[in-house]
Image (cartoon, rainbow, N blue to C red; front, top):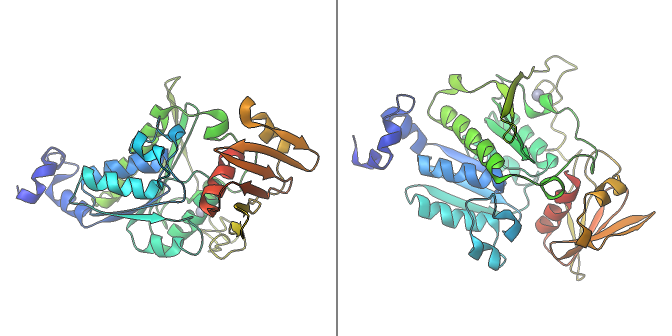
Length: 344
Ligand SMILES: [Zn+2]
């Protein structure tokens, strides 16, 4: 075996990988879109497996409440405000200096996602909100890049891989974004760290199949499990083809990429405040959002708004879904805080 493969010898020994597969990994590149519980764990698994280039992109900073599940970060990262992407790239480079790790500290939106997706062979879904997942799905379908999606909440996880042109895409699976405030989030429902880790490891496994040239081995079903109950299921996702089929993979409409859906968060000049635009899906159920808040969130409710504190910021949420976040001038951080409570 070549000396440069020595590090991976126990992986190369697997007939599923072999020397050829290992060389393919080194020649391949991955975008990790969102570096939370799924993205950070999938990233470190792929870096240790020897993927040649890994781009980690995230808008948020490391928070102590992340550490029970986001295995890549440590207490020092949370002690001072550290962008997740930056902390991730630093830890990843130490895990395997052979791999090129690039940090993108940015709110992923339609202005930067297409370029990032086109620069890699495959994308890992590390999104904490539907909006980003739809946007990245569109970019992946348009550019023909596999999109390895995943999600985890409570004790429940699921995983589904989009192979553009071969399988259903994410928009075939979820045809409409649930109304904001109606779906649980990790902040409101909690999350077991083992669950997100299982999902992330499954995403990394499917990615390794694609990148080693074994695309034929990728599971073509939606896989779901409850880790606490020990139950699992698999569902075939039908590709919605035809003229009235999936807007993205059948009709070639890219509403998120082309700005017909979604919009940018705007910093309000000189006020230490960011305005986060309404998510797609219309009005927000403020009572439902309020019900999910912890007792110490300082909740104020009027017919016109809901105000509460989260992660040191004051969030004012309006029934149309618009939010003002006081206490930060960072649009990415503001969006992250709002997304934690709206599941958007
Ligand atoms: Zn589709």
